[in-house]
Length: 121
Image (cartoon, rainbow, N blue to C red; front, side, top):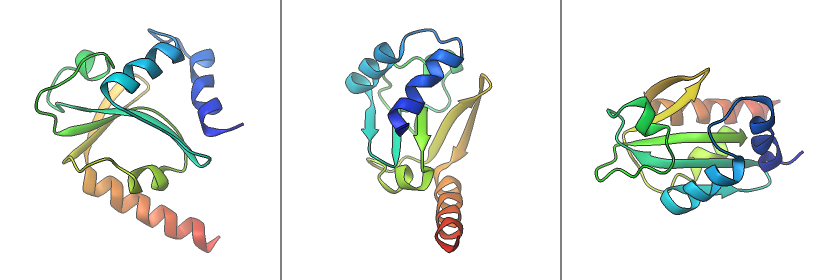
């Protein structure tokens, strides 16, 4: 399975507010979508201090974003963060319906360490 196929399969396993195609369209219009042989990611710039409801709604745009919200991801994380469109101070994502926000520098540091570990093995 390719990263985009694994990402789309999430919609078959978990209850989702919209279809994969609807969320893909929203991110194509209001965010960023990267699909490569090693990773797939949908995300957009958001106001990290906004509500979870607004941050997790891919149709909402923010005038002064300070955070990348990773909406859906599959593949090698270090590859995706190496190709971030532009720097914002924070990254957010939902896991088990809990929204978390982290400094981008911390995520990049962890990805770099993971990448080095994977190259050794």
